[in-house]
Length: 111
Image 1 (cartoon, rainbow, N blue to C red):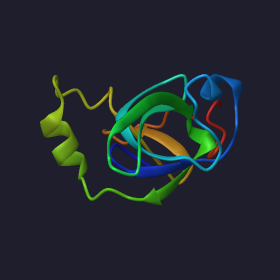
Image 2: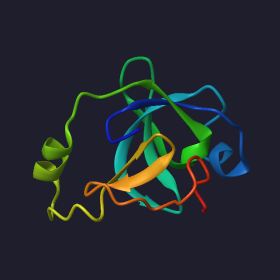
Image 3: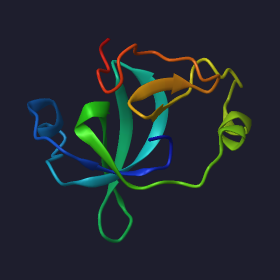
């Protein structure tokens, strides 16, 4: 799971409901500097018009469609090319672009 992946929300939560985001909604990760184990996800209507964006916990997302962007392309697009700050999720681990793991136990994003 990384920037520009299309993702589905897996759970209803009050913190998402205030943005009118519900289980089953599909959006696109648009910001992948992970804070609080969340990705910022952009939601659009069926015509591609912006509806809202919301920080969604990693464990509440599943990938619908992976983007084809590479780590190198992500680095080149950063305002400051610091690989420590931009993250992705692979095999249950939160990794920065250097491959350093944030969590110690796979799929336990708070470990």
